[in-house]
Image 1 (spheres, rainbow, N blue to C red):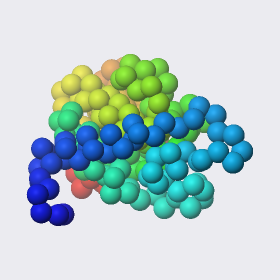
Image 2 (image 1 turned 30 degrees about the vertical axis):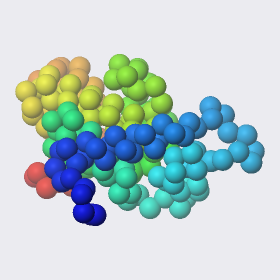
Image 3 (image 1 turned 90 degrees about the vertical axis):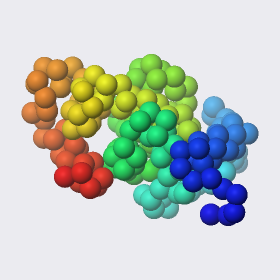
Image 4 (image 1 turned 120 degrees about the vertical axis):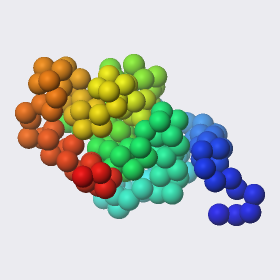
Length: 184
């Protein structure tokens, strides 16, 4: 930290704005041609050019963006960081076989509802994922396990089960995030 940098929510918000300006200065081409700059080049090195080189650790920039998004939506930053780790292993280019994309692995319809136009844009993905988790927390009375279950299995599954859906994948998902955040 250098002198003059702010701590706390205002400092995080200012850093988030700075990172957003940097990201907006680059715009990844819709289709990369052979020899074109890689997606990671356009993001200023937020991720390695070769996905096999990906360490699975949050870069300081991604960590700052995740914390700022969590604070923006009133979410516990440790839980949100654990969600990102679980969903994408901090890989902005993550794509599931079912079509979920980006750091927070939003499905295309959910991403669109959260205002995300490019799920592989780290800022948009983190903001959209935090926004969606906030909606699930609001829906389920700020109960993180239920909100996380809804994030994973869908809110209808939580409604139908009257709580935690009886899916082993969802139960393990919620336990993993809560344990990683030190909440279990």
